Image (cartoon, rainbow, N blue to C red; front, side):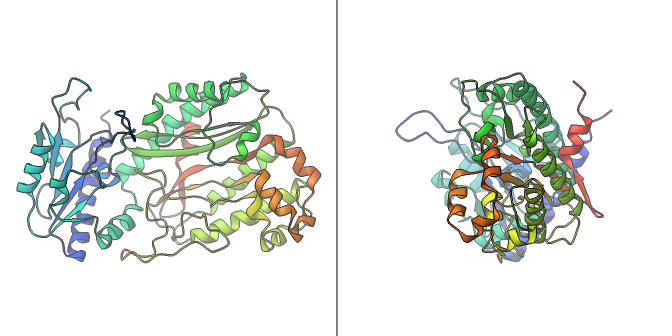
Length: 444
């Protein structure tokens, strides 16, 4: 059976062409140059930082490691891909361009930055916009206006709505990630260290650490209370709890999945199950027309109810939210856009013109404030944590009387619980890319 990705890419390419043509027309530009970027050396070193291609480049060309190349887009013309394939014996140069996407471009192979700049200079016309970071060679920087805000605002706003190709890429990224999650859970239950679990994850999903869309969070026991924990301790410790926030990539598109496990069938396991149930119930609410801010606020209430039912809070769930207690136990936002970036840009945009809708002042870390639409892909990741610093602050508040501190002490060694899925909004509800990937994974 022929892989459907090629036909999906053709539709994706046409959608990108339409979006970019409309954005250029609305902002007064005739030509757009999108530069992939290049890795740069670390400070006072000749070793280079891991390369991440310009996300705008990755939406067009499914080669996230292709450095130094550029796209020239002019409405009504086939886009030109200036493909840098240097003569290089220090590194493996890019392979010859091949695959389902190549027919959509006028591919021009060049050997060095000078040839890139020369070909771009010949290809542009009229008023030019250049999208890329500050590491571009000066010859490319000088082709036009760099990163014009009004143009970028339109491209970022539109990027939240994914094409069929993009959604399929994220389905596949989720399948790779699930392989890693399965292996990581098995390693945890076998008593592995954080470092060993991380290695088991990478091996199972077939991606090296610098190919993953973000640094894995592999946290045993109390380390789960550190929201972005990356220490990967090598010493083994008696396993009590395991929080894994880890993804995978496919053609530059990301998966972002979090699961939490208890080593025993204990009260922490019951808390994990309760958060998992709350997460699923929040996913079920996701549909077109729903304000994501309202979904976040509903998450606060449902997580507060979990804490009430597990004896951590003495007050009602509504009172816990009203008094601000939940910012101690759930200090981050419910989720974010996801695509060629793990935290895809544009989550606070209210319109294509770039108007912003900031998160509520009581929830400053919420990354998504938009109304859900068909094709929008985002995460749903509620959590409950026992973080010493935040708990110490809560102890000084009058609301401290609403907390059973002995119960908190019982949960402290476990760190916290987070459950996260990637969902795609459909015309009638949502598709859970992560749960579907777990359901489709072969049984061990």
